[in-house]
Image (cartoon, rainbow, N blue to C red):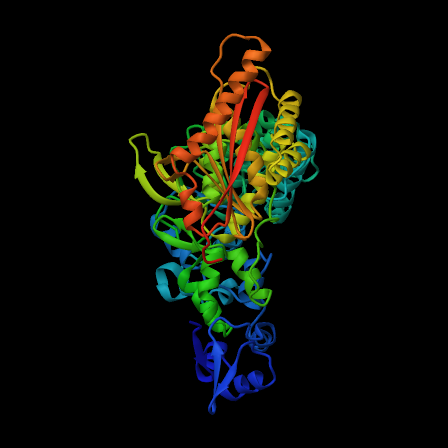
Length: 630
């Protein structure tokens, strides 16, 4: 039964008057609204002219800070979700070096610039940017920290180049710009001649390549000498050039530079008050932070700082209320919630802001916000059983995985189990349940957090598995399968097997199962594809349940001929045929079709397929399902 609300209720949700709502109903702007006596009744989930009315409310609000990473601009000219209590916590915990690990577009850069503006000594009075924020209400102790320190700020988020030479040049350029920002120190007559010469060599890019890695340490020493106060160090997206080096083949060179740059500047350096870094991965196993025993790593699994990267439910609720769209909370939650940072539920802030800015039209805003080359490796290196697990995630299931927060990029190829650690750190998965282990890592049940990521996951990860299962061949196999053309399915499968796989690949049943499951994933638009689920008195191999019940449903049972010798062709052919028939018979004996029939599928095609190396046999038969609600 459809649920209705009144004009008064909708007016409150939208922030306009009852009379305005009634006028919209009378003008046909609110679909499904109708009068009952003298009252308008409005469908609770109706298209309420959201664009027009959101526009009226939005006219009263500042614009949303989409793509704005400058704190002063964000807090003074845009709708700013206050994250300034992060400042209080980093002061309270007083950790020497803190590394924040979060997915892309979760507010890392804006928060880092906020820390810069708060801590940095400046000719400009920056208190104006904090006076109306939460941190200013925390008392004099915290206000006294504002504007006390020189700040060194490096952002490597845009260092994404194809070669080490280009990357090296741009790292040097980024360093040079920060030296230029502090060139006022050259006016200090007390600055030593060697420091002046060094500073000018950096500005002129005249240092030898081997000396650039020492620039962070040297700059902190010069600033400490000038200000008589040790600087605060901020390094944003430190691992962007490292990821690029892995993808483009110069990983060892960029790791060598970053190891010396970071450890040299942050290890046992009395000229640093505190330091903060951000990234997507920790990158610790190569000793990039060698000997840095004062490093505190804060990842998505940690409780501390959990509410400061991304939006909390309360912040999203307030944003929707401010826009007069509070009834969109359920939709926003379905699309953009589901992350668990520590014990805090978090919404993707980039997607929520774009959702609000686009008149509350839900879609995948996060998909194209970063480089995803690494995902191709994930899809290509995952073994068949893991590919099946990754497809199970898309069906809403959770997967138990060993999570190592210090996962490194090369691990994706070396250790398939690291895939889940990477996907969790990168924002493609979230934690449902966590069990701490004695080695400091965790055993977690992970799953896809929300509808947006389910779509992104399918496009970015599952679609890349088409490199393993070529598109043209897969399409030909599926077309014949859907038409019930057994001989054609067999012909196209054998053509595919002979043209793509190694003699050594073709072995166990699991290999062929993964192969057909990969092909079947291409039908996700029209079918719900499941694998190894319980039905009847057993577990079927693959089920294709139609989203439109007027279509056929499909059950596929797979067998592999366990022959070690070659055998003659006639014997192999006969045994393959018998095995395919046995697979078909198993569908009936185990009652696999009962679930589809009970769900209202009208026609069901049962398919038995037997494999031996690059040969296969296919048999099928159709049976009527049971008429059900469609």
